[in-house]
Amino acid sequence: MPQLPIASTALLHRAIPSSCSINPSLLEEDDGSFENSIGFSGGASTAYFVNRVSPSSYPVQLQKLEIFFGNRANGLAVNTTITLLVGFNDGQKGHGTTEISGGSNINGIKFRKFPDFQVGVLGQWNVYDFSATPIPPLGSGDFVVGFEVNNLPNIFPADEDTSSASQGRSYVSTDGSSFKVIDSFGSSLAGNFGIRATVLPVFGIGGGCTSVTSLVKPSGTVVYQPKAKKAAKQTFKVTITNQSGLVQTVNGLVAGLGNAFTITSISPTLPRTIKNGKKQSFTVKTERAAGLGIAVATAPFFTINLSCGVLTTAGLLAQPVLFSSQGIRVEVEGVGIESVQLQLFDLTGRQLLERTTEGTALSLPGADESGRLLSNGVYLYVVTAKDGAGNVLRSVVRKLVIGANVSSA
Image 1 (tube, rainbow, N blue to C red):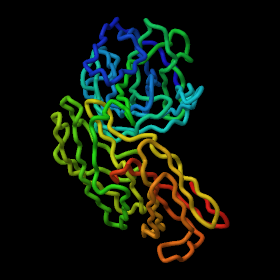
Image 2 (tube, one colour):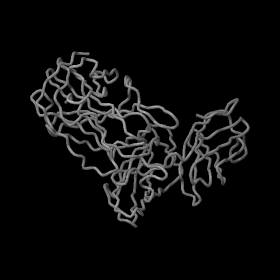
Image 3 (cartoon, rainbow, N blue to C red):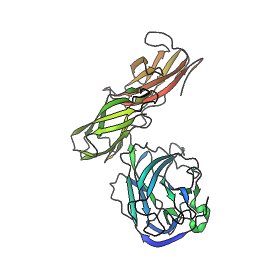
Image 4 (cartoon, rainbow, N blue to C red):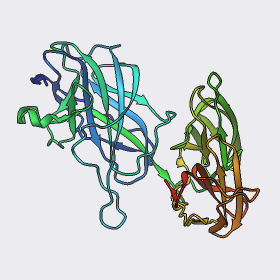
């Protein structure tokens, strides 16, 4: 890795007061002033500058990425193309059930890359909006966020705060795989990059959006079966009812974590306000691209970003438990569950079995609807928990391998 010399800059006081509501949180390592700039003096075709930032509670979803680009001759120019980076540095359980920050070693981290963004303004924060971008919520650990750029010789892309204590959370790399904390190059380079993230809490039962509800049709499960040259398509109707006492704004609607489809259009377009006591329906068109394998999408299909927070269901379903080659038993747990449904599919997407029972446990023999014992092989099963009105609370899809013993994954 090339040496990173200091390029001093004038003291810049550019702390921008947040105009966000009380719900979003700004994750920052800097103090709002930037005294140094960092770059690869000999140049690097791919230069990475990232911060590791941690929310105070979980889960959260990324809303905005903010980067400070200084107005200086040796910095990036307006309209310079950059690739924005969003990575997940998973944490672990602390005492009890408290989630804690991820580790300081981020080597090998996988980024979601968003190319073709640009430096918009100099001497102030550039704000990049991710509120309508399908980025899964962070359940533990850290976000690792920043940018990648073609670092020309004698150009120093990253602005660094050195007037406050280094947090040891700013990293550089030339390959996007091996990262070094900037402090490791010497105390004169220690500091905090001007890279911030704005996040929103993801509320589950009892959260901040409990007076706002959503209903999705179709519900339960949807099987996508794309052909070699033809995408599989599905249209959903999403109805949001606002009983919160306030006007709410729907800012984004994205595919839920683990659902293997892409949203192609939303009508009417977002953002959209909903008055208290009113409802709004959206037509959401989705597809799974041609040439991909069969996939089963499960409710909740979408995560909905509102002004009150993120509308989703969380923590409602325990992992199903399967016993013995003679049969299958599923046990679920959670608030408000009145019935449980099991659907079994072969790998062509054909439904072999469907059973629903009241309560939170379901047992049945290892046979299809015709009573034929299931052959050894690989299957997909979907477990759906519903409330007393038949509304889907949560679904999960798992792989079932039937051989000498039944097992799930």
